[in-house]
Length: 223
View (cartoon, rainbow, N blue to C red):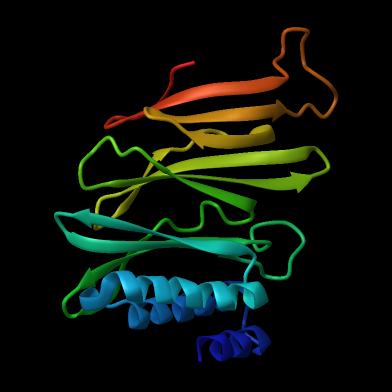
């Protein structure tokens, strides 16, 4: 079973953490490719996600999510999950995987991934945004890394067109504890800024209340 495969990978004396992470991702990808079927898509997708949720409490750190996109390239299923590597902090503390798979009559095949940009960040939140372009899926991801200077938050917006992921918003990390909410035009980010030695000036903001619009050209701050 896939659970037994994961246990064997975790127990193996592999050459390095990178190889272990690659092996885990490949095992999950094979499981998804074998589980989802085009002729029984809704039921097989639900069964696949149920299987992942049973596996993840033992092996992974974040509840998996899946999304569906119908585009000119055909139907795709997009899966998000995270797993830890036994490290307290750093890029190996958490691996966040956002993979896309094409669902065709001849089977399911992996087509694209967002890479390692969110690795090391925990408490991953994902929001499906109103897509400004037909046949595309837009997702907002956010996560934190905690340290002596408090919580440091990273956010990314990815667009998937049925073939490739593209980063559409990659702001600099911000110190603070923030939450996101989807709106009809895009999304909001609210929360509290963190200052290690107190605000840098009397006018430095303490609360964040930013509103963003999602457009075909990218993401723009509107308030």
